Image 1 (cartoon, helix red, strand yellow):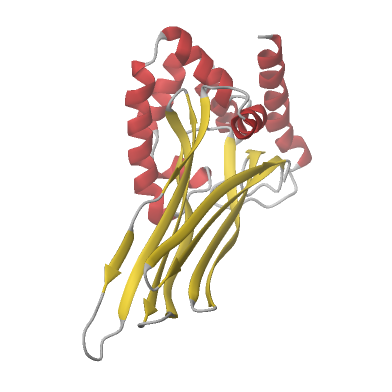
Image 2 (tube, one colour):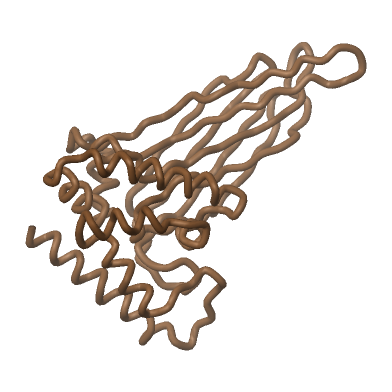
Length: 252
């Protein structure tokens, strides 16, 4: 409990300190005011506060957390799912869940290392959509992979990658579309910043890669303690999805 309170004190000082240290720095449209930063901490002070946060979760909050505008609706829908799941937890587990998400550095580390049975990484194969064509029209496929981090069975963040490509009888011939995105984040203390989003053809196969920095702080201010990176990849051939992978690296 003392460790939990020390973390809350640290993040309070850190977020309030941005005004002093970063006053002369420019901020983008998704930066937030001093008062709003204090409110972020209130979101995780109690189960009642977190429930209210999820009930009010909207596209603006999704954007603040590093979710692309095109996927903000998906994130809002995810928050509603989290709300229902959180309400079903016992009072004790609700408090434990808030303790987990209030210390994301340990949350990620313990999830990866398997130190806590309440924490897990879940990878989903998703689909390999096939559209064979006859005649002059090219055949194409869509492949996708997702990775989620869960606490007490509740998804608190989810990453996804998707690619679409043309193929012939023997190989992948052309990339048609690619994107990697965060589709879910209901931890108000953690923001994501994508640093890689690429898809390419090599050796007759399609490869897609996405990478993010995740950190405690506010996107757009230039301040925040980076606490790690997230990678997601997908690979496909003419027959469909070959593999997908998802992993995190605490400390970057």
